[in-house]
Image (cartoon, rainbow, N blue to C red):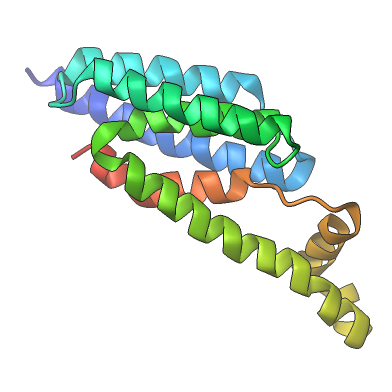
Length: 169
């Protein structure tokens, strides 16, 4: 059927757009809107219905539930925000059992790198204040450092965009 490739390409485009929107929103407003996660769930259902992938829906839902429980525990202890939990949970549904480990490891690596950038931003702003004032990225990192936050949606979304081709393979 000719419509299946067109629908699949549209779903892939929307997936990338929604993830990119979540990243930009987390950077600018420290908020990942609920509608982004809901749209990603809807897209997954549509993708599953159109393409009938070789993954087990039950196993994907199980992976999603495990990630939700673990990330909700991190939320409870103040280590993740609510939007991060929802985005991570939905994207683990997309990753399914075949890609979940790679996705979570990649989120952890990118998140660790982001955390180091936030921590080290104070070094640059303390020792080279002229540079920090002129650089919007350093200014944003220093702001996050002073507030004691690290918008983890950046790491979650970035990892999803890196792993996404394997979601659609």
